[in-house]
Length: 246
View (tube, rainbow, N blue to C red):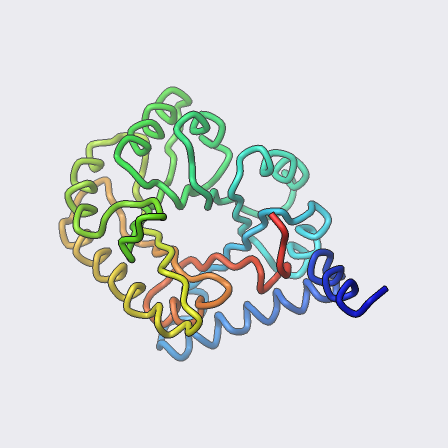
């Protein structure tokens, strides 16, 4: 086996010890970033992004301390959720959600991070009402105003939230964003700061059915900066499970 093949095998199929060490490394960095920002320990929760990760490797992560798992695709998530029904874990939906898939996610995920339009919010509300459930959601904001990304325009999200405040079964808990990709994590800081400012503005409206307790921002390359700027949920995959071909 060549050196390159060996490296690729390691990245695609990390050994259990590697996963455990990576989980602990990320958790340690989260605690350090909280301390640096003057935030209480435990303020930030880790969402392990498990797209293209096997059930076995997810299990290694759970044994190492993961408690929130984030999936991007409904069909991929189903067998994983079924495999861990007795495990002390929560599942979040972190991928782009199509309206035709909404029925499948209601009640399956504790939190949907990626509500990117009023139409989608209304569909979630309708399906949750039919199921007799309350579905917690975050609103995705296209903070970099990128044409290739979904999400509410930053200039429109406050008005949209006021309209969604009338929904009875889709419960808005905060905001989510994916900033433009940069080589330097610190260059993402202004985008995270802008999202935090938007959350403050929305919270100041004091809408009875809208909460701004959660800010889902920061991934493997920039989660420490996101924490310094107010993240409460960080979505980390590669730093735990290695690079994946998807």
